[in-house]
Image 1 (cartoon, rainbow, N blue to C red):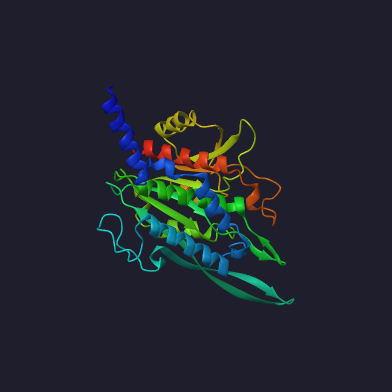
Image 2: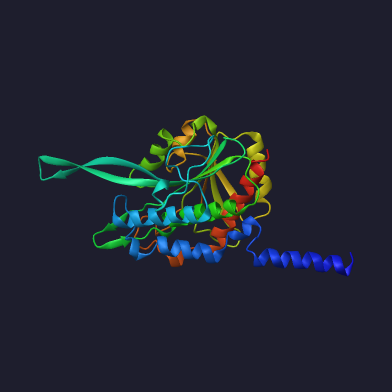
Length: 319
């Protein structure tokens, strides 16, 4: 290769960097992950309990991220096969509002019904077809109880961070994706997977168009020199299983496989026969305790998991 050609290539690379045109997966960074997760798991949000002000603040934060990344909103309800609607002014076009109720006992013989209003936050990157890949992560946690804030850094500010980093990475690509990508931050997971159930009953496209659901719940505590990443799955084809293994070889973890189960938001989609992958770095003593804090997050591991999901999805769309 001549000197002139080498200089041309180097110049093009430098211009690409200066213009912010990094390879899409390079948008998934430790710095950005720390910035997002440290806010979501901060005392300011009071544990993000469904219906609480901190949960609403988190929803607005996620919606504004989607807006800044250029994702299409879901309101007005002009969905996958039609021209995208104009972007919302305040981010609320990404909200999928719903309510749920529960009963509390008042005294020995009386009870009352409490109704909670909350929202999923959903953004779309339109693909060349109306086939959908759904990325999901719940952003709610336990809120504040007995004067203690349950910040839920791993559960599930970590999964929400991965969701946002993936949304930015895919939005950065200059090539329109083969499939339509739907990014859903679910609320009310901690009270019975209610947000994901609401989405499953009110999807942005028919569920039969959903070719894959990827769920990220507690992905911030990868452990050890040869870490194991739990991968719960259901309804996978041989091609998907083979691709999971193929992409795994590049990454510094080994999968521990298990059936999908029903303990997180993928459950509603698994029951509908949709292929599901649920990424999880395992339980720990801080699970559902006020000590699940940001300083315990393994950010290097979180970034590697997020990059794996990006690469796997990119290759999946080419199957």
